[in-house]
Amino acid sequence: MVPQEPYFELRLAESPSDIRAAQRLRYEVFVRELGADGAMVDHDAGLEIDRFDPHFDHLMLLDHRRAAEDQVVGVYRLMQAEGAKAAGQFYSEDEYDLERLKSSGRRLLELGRSCVHADYRGGTALMHLWNGLADYILSHEIEILFGVASLHGTDITQLAAPLSLLHHRHLAPSSLRPKARAAGYQDMALVAEDDLDRTAATRALPALIKAYLRLGGTVGEGAFVDHAFNCTDICLILDTAVMSEKYRALYARSRTP
Image (cartoon, rainbow, N blue to C red; front, top):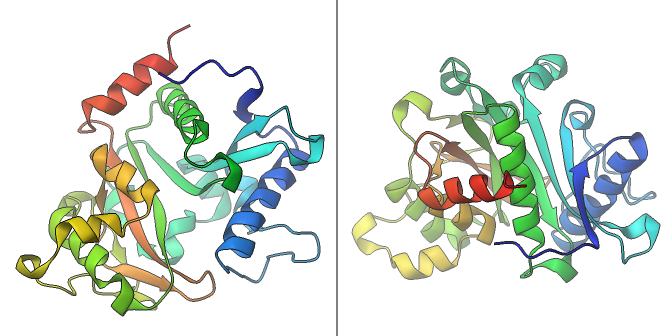
């Protein structure tokens, strides 16, 4: 159970200034910490921006103990099919062919740009965000969650074990499985399953990816190497019909008055 912490506020962005606050946190995490860059990154203003921001809902966690301009300590971007239609595509479609997901007839939610301020990692911030996500999913009757998640760096020799583990143990069902586009496609079957040190490979996965896998998440075919963002992306898929009971319990808690 997430403890009562009255200094935290969880809500969707309501104004352009809210979105800029989310973009400032993203700049701190993705650009300053992880070395990302891109055509729309505003280094002078310290904002990590892209053209999709107006079409996402931005879930924000604020800590009211901090200065007003620095209160956003966690963010999540959420895009439904209606937002993707307005944007011309889902964000992930630059990297993955999503046709199987889009033709499934099920209600989709794309997740992305999830990050937590460095001072709040290891605490309850991520659980607060996930409670908010659970509430959003129930409110909008979402059936499938998906989105790209990143492993830091583009040196595939360093990522061979975790990518191979994902390929051998966590591939999505073929009926829902996205495939990385040719421009950045990286085969994930780099180490034979029998040769894998599964414990070490699991340890090498980012915490967010491991969390989705524990909840029943699966991955698409192939990774996508993103040199601009200094990362190697995978496509995560979570079908709410088969998710773990642990997450169902989280849903129930988030809806309890």
